Image (tube, rainbow, N blue to C red):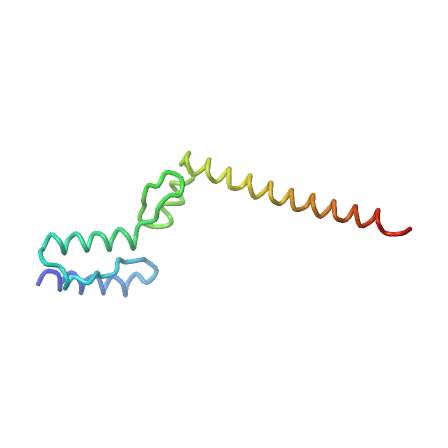
Length: 111
C-alpha cells in the first residue's frame, strides 16, 4: 500500500517539476524481499540522478551541483588543464603543417 501512495506522489511531482529529473521506477515485481526491493530502488535512484565528476569521481545530484563542485575540484582542474593543453598542441601542430604545406607549394611552383 505504501509504495502505491509514494508512486502517486512521485507522478504528481513529475508533473509539477517537468524540468527536474526524477528517478525511474525499477521493475520491483522481480524482487523477492523488501530488502531486495529497496536495493533495486536505491540503484535506480543513484544511476538515473547522480552525475560523476570526471576528476575525483565523486557523485552529485544534478548538473548544477557538479558544475559548482568542479570550480573547486583540484583533480578536475588538472585533467581539464591537460585536456585543453592537448587540444592547443594539436591545433598548433595542424596550423604548422598547413603553413609548411603552403611554403612548400610556393617554392615548388615556377616563378
